[in-house]
Length: 352
Image (cartoon, rainbow, N blue to C red; front, side):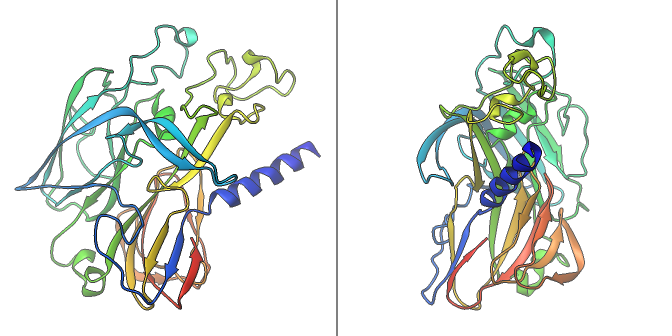
């Protein structure tokens, strides 16, 4: 009976959490700009003359989120790229180089932590370009690098000239700290664009407004801080026989799971905002680039009253556009990307 109630509560929380955004269709004109008529878009950084040369600062930053259950506005302090959730969108072309200076401005790691046990070193990091077919060695896409707090770290990733175009992303990948950093929103889009004969060159796709939607789950304690792990844990999961003993609590029990209720807040966000609204005109077509940048959640994504037209999955263009009937969901695993074309229907407000 207890197990059944726990599962029911989990399902309700998951369904409510997936109320990610709203689409409002009206007869008024849409406006151009950094926001797609009110819908947040990350800052965009483009390559120039064959190189995208930029600096990414990893730092604790304050952002405002709205609790989806109570409607209460809260300030959160989480590890971020450039202070935003998500980080900037990086745009390159095949044959370009990504030249990034990653400045780790996160705090120093605690001096005493888990007596040498895993996981540890929450503020040590590195950078992974998820999905790219590039070198994993040296200062390229090397997930075994350790970028310590207070250091500047050069990264040089060379994109092959024949690399597939599409929607990719970047995120930390240091074993032992990546979960903590994901829970704070450390991720960003990485686009490879351009070239004849590609999806970007199709007239119907080229004419559509390009909108990125990064889905993330931000988790904090009751004070708005991202919590690392239960330092006293001796088990990965919580023991059912002594749930109040800190040593018998699981590694991640500080987030309110595994027997530690009401110790945390969860925020399901689209581009760092809970329940944003995107405006379109009837008949307008947009290209939505979806990214599941959550730490471990599978997302069930559908648009009320509208069918989705899938043109790419994980940066691979489909051979023929897949048309889904209205209200049919797409299942997105962690790290997955879908590019969908959406045609706005009758005026109204629709839930994504």
